[in-house]
Length: 331
Image (cartoon, helix red, strand yellow):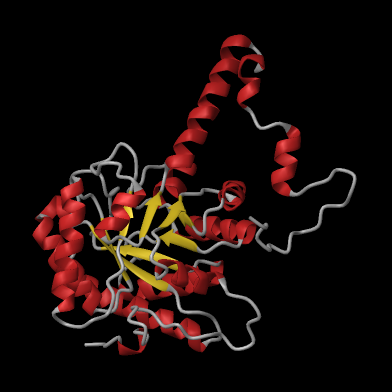
């Protein structure tokens, strides 16, 4: 079996801390790794286009998340594996270019077998992602908070993780940077919490850099999962186990404060569809008002003004607009 020893740094993390030759500033990929090891939980809001990514940057978030649910819904289809990789790549590229923050992107099941998962790593890397997550569902997959999911075997998913991690290493050898490979397990609602812990441990052994337990159903389960996985891994080695939580609305998991998740031992938390849901509700209200009233006067106060929109885009109508250098705004 492929071993992942090269991916472990002396500091005890599950990814390398190598500096890139010739760099004069910290890269987005390295900044994400440092944030995860900083001792403070990293919040990644879901963004769905370049403008929402700029808003997240301006709000002070250190990284952003591209959700398969948002990519799918934006194209008018449900999150059941219908969106092709090209739709994901378009969104990642747009988001990364607009905000230049680290982007963690949903990669569903890797768009195929292990070889396809490896290709996905290379494609996401080229599009500007700093990290991706793969899930252990069968294809066609389902949203992680729906019933009726089916899982591939642990061995099959471990093989997919191994191929993805090898692809991440090849990105470095080609002059790029190592991508963070996050393993998501949907086992809680299919096989139970104990199985989710066992699968996660196997995925770490296969080389995953971080674990994402999907669909946990109580605060107690979040705490138990973190404690049991870390206990199991501590018996094998002293390397740090990185964990990510999903605080999506209207799903199986309770909405927990980030401070509580941090105390439980989680290093990152995604809010995948929050801004998208709010934006779509606002759009629905405007369209309904326009249809009912014949104009938008009633909802005008809820809109971005022209000046506010131009400020987000760094556009001055009196001057030619230049493509931004993507240097993050001072905070």
